[in-house]
Length: 345
Figure (cartoon, rainbow, N blue to C red):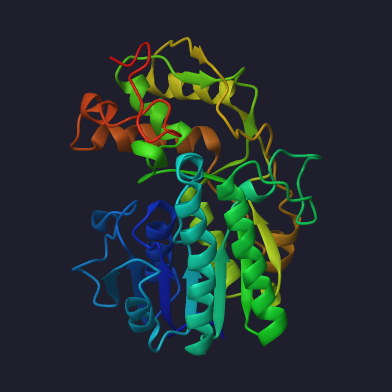
């Protein structure tokens, strides 16, 4: 029997981009008894939780993972934890201390309280940022971890704590490392803003993409529906307990190629504006998906070009105009405050 069947599940960061899609996946396909979301809504949004008010199995706890009383209440009676709550990579460039406090210290606290609550499975959702730039490709789970940023370091610390809890206490932990995820609900605004939604919003306004550096940086992009399905598959896989598993598509796309694909999807011919390189930018990422396939038979389903086309239409359907969204984009979003750059008006 699947560990998720009839289980009570807690998703930390479950109102965020990936977390909310995982909530959808759990409610729709895995016959769970209940899903609790613990999220302070700093990066997440209540409207991302489509089941709120429609599915009695879904409950939102609006609190920080460092709030011990709220964390203990959310964990009461929980069988499985998916831990996604974190602050992002660009946030770490302007506030490394808080980034570490949430991503590393917060993870340790969640592990401690989950162990006390005797959860049967704990999935720590890490990041490909723990690797830094690829030293060889494709990147398997034994690839060296040399993070470029405090975010990558803090996620690596969280991984180490999850593995230590398995080895020291016998806690049934799984470490999942999603590579670059994109899709509906992705962040374009503030220091959470990602390259794909930011590029789409600019293109919808008729503005060219901003490319930091030469644009030959590559990423392994995976649609968020696939990421959610992969996380759920790892969460219910007994053979994954104690393992650290990469989760990606197994193909790479350069930022220059991405700009071309977005421009075609929007129906525009937009020549990128070249900017100075971004600090801490990883040069190359490409996953070796062998282990996740062996463990769970997981395969991605959404081709990149069709996923981008669908995401462009999702942005077009938003009630907020592209110009209003553009006003919320910070071009150099690794700094506490930024100014508008050329072509952004």
